[in-house]
Image (cartoon, rainbow, N blue to C red; front, side, top):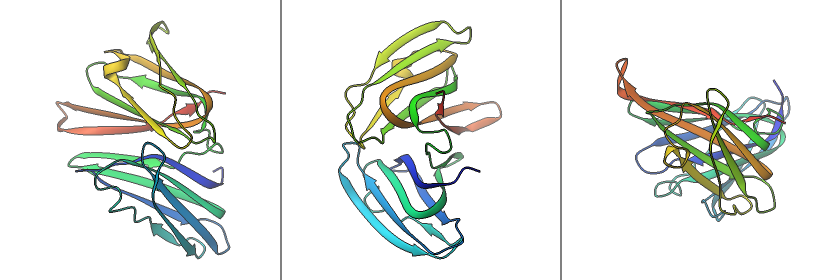
Length: 210
């Protein structure tokens, strides 16, 4: 597994969603971890530090900052770390490892290999660079034909931007994100059906193409 000292989470959800992130010091030495939570306009609303022994865990206490609004979260350390986010609402559970360049989930060109027609698809993009960026969204059907394209407004450094199937259209296919700066992105798929009458959720990180 590629190791990293910095992990990025595009969202810690607000409201009725129960959401938490746990980080682990996976090095063989004591470490110091800094956690910084921001709103969508990159304002720092909470931060905290923790000294940790090897393989000790810390559930990052971003509440009450996350009670009324979504936050992004950045975890940085002087040693290698691993982390996981769990987001719950009834039978819907989203789970994400933190994104990073080392794990090929942070870059200028991200790909989601699925977009489901007839279901609720939701995406959040996090600009982790120190410069403003614009993200171009390319929607293809399963035959590889481009069926829709649009662009974000300027996203400030450490800011986030959200789009959904209201913008992509009712398409069975894929999503490509092309950015001027390095970004990370999450996809949340929500659906109900015969085998999931109470609803289920699937979470994916965008995969770096190049």
